[in-house]
Structures are given as structure tokens and as C-alpha cells.
Image (cartoon, rainbow, N blue to C red; front, top):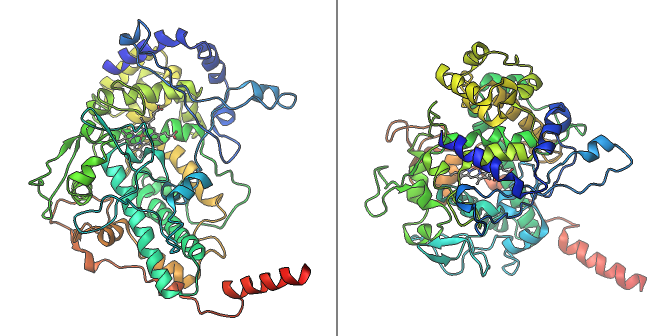
Length: 523
Ligand code: HEM
């Protein structure tokens, strides 16, 4: 296996990183997943640093690997064992709150907002618009852009998440949400002429956050983990629970949610209005879409890409090829000047973070440990894959969690095996129940507003922000055009009248005047 060869090379290279000894990984592996896998605080600062191996003689035989920056050692004197453990940090919030649109902190947020327009909108691209005059994402103002057009560096798009330029479908989703924000902000301004820019922005952001939560939890997660797991592990909403830790668990980010890498197709299809291969902009190999935002501007906007995403089935992992070669042979990662291998990165990231092995996580989820090849064959759909993995790892306890989870047979009606379903479900429940701004939490929205929010679907958002006129009613269910496709006009839309607010005494203007009078009074 190419992947295994690569991974072994990574290990051989590890003497180049004095802080990356196998010792640390062995130490943490002996600990319980409960202690090492689930983190304590809400925000971590995850920064990776570049290990440029290119200038070393052995560069050709190595894949560069940026270790996740360890958190500072600050627990000395309290819990020495905890403090001795290397932990990683995140750069972004774990909450499902639309931060991909707005950023996870004030610095990015201020860059994204249109603060001059006084209209509560997000800033848009000043140089280009799509063929129908719809806006594009603004450009990053960086002198050293990582986006390429041939050999030439070109501008990258800016959004709330720095990965926005990784691939064209991802960039298109970012753009859909930007347009949706600006559209809602415009309607709210019209409905509530007395609202100032800040109120319009915050109310719009609150709506966009709620829509992210609804689409993720109602439309997406049940299809990934299956209805049974959803009902058993997540269940109906029971209100905000302040005892729940909503931070992203290490195992979720480093392994379980990376199940998605096996759903990526080697081709990004671009389709015309009849959902056929686009005459002018043919489909692209996946690697041709990495960090290539110029293709959106120069090659027909996002509509062909969005149609391609709707009209193409997600890849299903094949036992002999879990990930497409486009990801294992042609991956581009920020600032690394060579083709990368996502499978190797995932395996090595799990070790970098000291994740316990596959069997420990099965234990954690209440699933039987794998003790023999026969046990393993029971949970893996292809017996020969089970054999090859055990030959390679020698003992079931050694199997890396990402690989073990990926080869498990899917649970009924799901896209993941039982262990990944369990880990994803636990994380999603924590993100919902531990979020005091969850859209269904007390005081967040009126009943009338909730009813309107529930009408929205990803398909409708696509309809409202592109020139696409026919869509599958549920964007997460594949349908071969025209079977099952509906006209955009037939999909329900949110009516923002529910946000109309009568101007009353004590509105912003009055409060301002009162504040100024009070200041005079006390001088
Ligand atoms: C073309 C599509 C994709 C590409 C090129 C891609 C690429 C990457 C890369 C390069 C990393 C960092 C690897 C490392 O150094 O550890 C990563 C991380 C990750 N990916 Fe993907 N990915 C794609 C799609 C997906 C999908 C569809 C999902 C889930 C549904 C997903 C989930 C994740 C997660 C959870 C992480 C870890 C993020 C973190 O810890 O902050 N990815 N991906």
C-alpha cells in the first residue's frame, strides 16, 4: 500500500523532530481515552508550524509534517500527570454558529464586515461580480498568496474560515452564505427602518447561525450517523445544559469527523442548467480545484459547481481504496511546496495528538474490543482488508483509530460505522446541549420566528443565491436529474415579517439621546 509506505517514511524521518519522539505517543496511548481524548476548555489555539524538509538531503523520501503546536505547560503543582501530557490547541470555536461566515474572533470579523456601508452587510469583492451581477467573496490582502493560476500567484478569497480556498465546492458554500447574509440584512433593514447597522448585522448573524444549526442537525447529521444512532445518542432537544462541555474533542477533529475524506470524489463536476456536462466549463480533476478561486471568477461563477455537487453522488469508500488518489497523491496543503497525502496526514495527526488506538475507542463507545482476526472480520465489510490491516499492525490494539473507524461496515442508513457514529453523535450532542445560544434555547427566537426558520433548507438557500432554478428538495439526498427535482418556486421560504419590530419608546435613538443627556447631567 502506497499509504503505508509513506507513513513508514514519516516515521523514519521523525528523528528530525527532537520533540516528536515515539516516547510521548506511547505514554499517552497507555492512558484512558476518557482522560486524553476529551478536552476541557472551549477554545484552543491550534497553530501548526512548518517543518520544511525540502532543504534536507533526505527530502525526497519524506513527507513534511507540521506538528500541532502544544499547549503551554501551566498545570504544574496541580495535576502533574495532566500537565505532563502534551495537548493541542484550536484556533477556532467549536460551536455551530456560522463562524465559517463571520470568523471566530474580532480581528477576522472586522475584516469581513462592511463597516462603512452602515447596512449590517458583509463586505464583498470590489473587483468582480458573477455573470448576473451577484457578488463574490472579498479578496485576501496578502502579498504572499497561496492561490495559484498556473505558476502565477493570484488573489485568494477571504471568509470566516481560512480553509475557504481549499476546493471549489467549499468556496461555493462560503459564497452562498455570504450572499444569504447580505440578502437577509437588506430585508431586515427594509422591515425595520429604525434599526441601526449593528442591530441589522447582529440579528442577521443570529439567523444565519440558527440556519447552520438547523441544516447541520436536522438535515445532515442523521444521514451521516443514521437515524438509530441519532435517536439513541442525540435524541430530542431538552434545553441548554450548563454542565455539558461543548468544546471539540480531540478524537472528533483528529479522527472521527475525518470520515468525510472518504466521501470525496476524484472529479469536481460542473453542470449546465439541464444538469449535463457544462459546454464551456468541463468537469475538473479534484487537484485542479485546490486553491484555485480564479476558476470561479473566470469560469462561470459558482452555479456550475453547485449543480455538480447536487447532481453527483458522494464517493463511497471502496475496501481497496479508501481515499481517492487525488487526495493521497495530489493534495495541496497551505505553504507546502510538494504534493501531499491526506491519508498519511490523518494517521500521523492521530499519533501527533497521542490519540489512543482503535480498540480503546471501541471500548469508550461500549463496543466489543477486537481481539482476533475473526472479531475484526465481523466489523469490517471486506475480510481481506481486515487481514491486511492486522498483518500490518500485528495486534488489534495497534490499529490507528482513523483507519479502524473508516473500514468498519456502515451502520444501517448511515455513512459511518458504529464507532465513528458514536463519536460523532457524542460531539454533536455536546455542541447542541452545551450551547446556550442554540436556536431552540429559551429566549432565542419567538415561536413565530422558529416556525419560519424551520422552513429553510440548503436547497432553498441555493435557489435564493444563484440562478439555479431546479434542485432536489433535500440537497443531502442525491437524485439523478430530472427525477425528484423540483422548481425552486415550490420550496418553502422563510418570511422575515416575523422579525418586524414596531419602533417604540426606548429604541436605540432614544437610548442614545438619554445617554447623552445623562452624560451632560453628571458633568
Ligand atoms: C476536497 C476535500 C477535502 C480536502 C482537500 C481536505 C483536506 C484536509 C486537510 C489537508 C486537513 C489537515 C490534515 C492534517 O494536517 O492533519 C484536513 C483536516 C480535516 N478535515 Fe478535511 N478535507 C476535505 C474534505 C473534508 C470533509 C468532507 C470533511 C468532513 C465531512 C473533512 C473533515 C476534516 C476534519 C474534521 C479535519 C480536522 C480539522 C481540524 O482539526 O481543525 N474534510 N482536511
